[in-house]
Length: 176
Image (cartoon, rainbow, N blue to C red; front, side, top):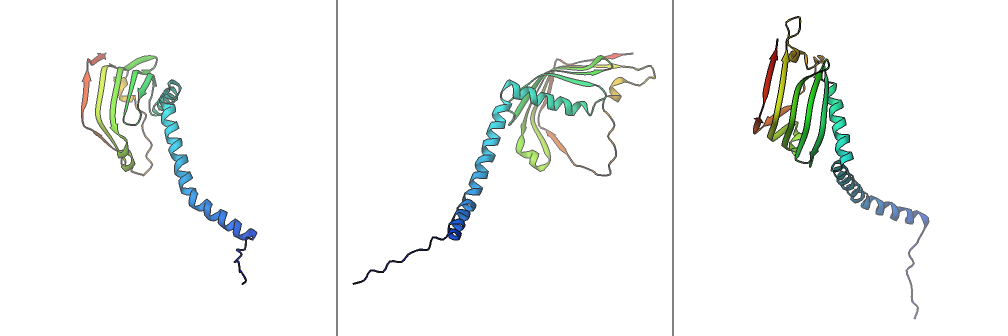
């Protein structure tokens, strides 16, 4: 009696094909794992003092481009996933503080940003002080605080929703 064994051909091309198929099957899993790791490490970095300071510097830089003045923020805290707070906010114009805010706290829904809406569920401003000064040409310093935006012809729709807005211990001063 003769035993016939079937011998599978293990040629280099079939080995390459098997490796390639295995790589294709594992690729989505590896990409998802890398993205999850990057998200967690970014969030974890933001929770450190260094990460918060880098975020604060980024925000200050972006907002200073929009102002005829200089914004300073003392400290930024929060989970960044659904709430953030900033302390010791000041806007300087011509060497003079025109807006001072002790603290701003905001709770928001981050997934709404994907749809183009900034949805703030709770906005709290503590101890704001706004100082309006009349310039020699009879205009007010606060009117020129924001830089005019160039007309690009494109209309962008950014919706901001605020469910609850609260101000405590605010002051306003007008200097003529």
